[in-house]
Amino acid sequence: MLEVIKRSRLLMMTGLLSVVLAGCSGDTEANVAEETDNEGTEEVEPDAEDTTDEESEGGLDVGIILPTRDEPRWVQDEQRFMDALSDSDYTTEILFSQGSSANELQNVETLVSKGIDILIMSPHDGDAAGAAAQAAADEGITVIAYDRLITSTKAVDYYVTFDSVAVGEAQGQYLVDNAEGSDIPLYLYAGASSDNNAFLFFEGAWSVLQPKIEDGTFVIANSSEAEALSGTAELTRDEMGSIMGQITTNWDPNEAINRAQTHLTSAGDDLKGDVAILAPNDGTARSIADTFSADSDITSYVITGQDAEMASIQYIIDGKQSMTVFKDVRRLVEDAMGMAITILDGDTPETTGSYDNGAKDVEAMQSEVIVVNQDNVKAELIDSGYYEASEFTGLD
Ligand code: BGC
Image (cartoon, rainbow, N blue to C red; front, side):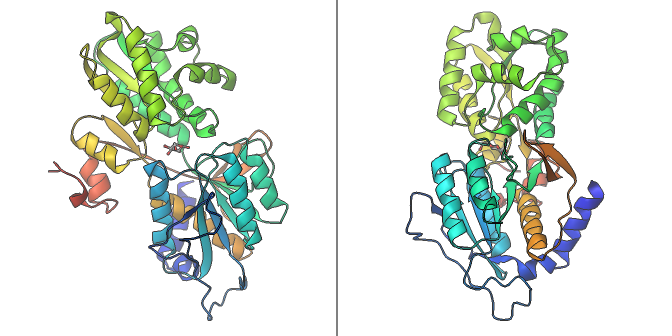
């Protein structure tokens, strides 16, 4: 797998991709599905000297659909796509579905009508997105699922993703590594059940946490379903679903606050004090952390996250969030666009494995993740050029 990854990076470095990458100017405002007039969207036409065979005259080459602008994670993806595409010849357009499968389908129809050959889509709801993927596939368009798998459909060709089970494992491991003593109250939170990733994150975290629940290091504080399954090392999807039904945030920071408040209100003194919190991503982690901080019976907490959102990097620097899992979106964009261009060139993209989406095994390109806490935040996120030091306060 590593070899393949290295090779795809090498391709980027040779400049091959930058020659043909799609045009989408850096200051482009991606439009939202509700805006049917496409105002604010810019397309860059292919250069006259475009020498590729895949002439795209009069049409758009690649359509990109992201789930929502309401979470910094996806605004970051938009920015990284625009950075990668600023200098290239294929045309692209980025649309947001704003947390609605109906918008998503409309976005696909819009892009199909503009003649795309490739659709890169991160679905709002994995199952519901099947109809949108099918609408594209019916027109002979290659569908690439981006970060989130499109599920229960054959109408998806490839999947570009991070190792989501490893994200959950890293979160669980962080809580284990920072656990002192026994009977530590463990508060579990999860993402939206409509997102396949939420299951993968939980599966990874559970695989690490469950033995430590069984040996008495942790005591589950907020899920009777998880307690009932605490002797089970490998959960079925249905079992995970029953736990997630009690602890889901739906990826919504406000819902996370409500859940956390309800859990803290019903928790006795034995479930307060020094606690551990599995938070599925940065947006929910900040809300949950704030809610726990406001409870005077919580003396300390260790809390996880993911996405390396800027606000959470500041929380980590300030000691308000313990860790995040850094998923380098530049890398995901590079893989997705590399795959798109390979297909536009008439070749078969390289993959590193496959994911069962319930209807087929989808060939996938997967990349690794990095755990970030106070110790390495500067090295991983500033020194690497991902963020500017000036965007934060209190960095040494
Ligand atoms: C993504 C996470 C993101 C979450 C909520 C997941 O599918 O992998 O990075 O935080 O959705 O948008």
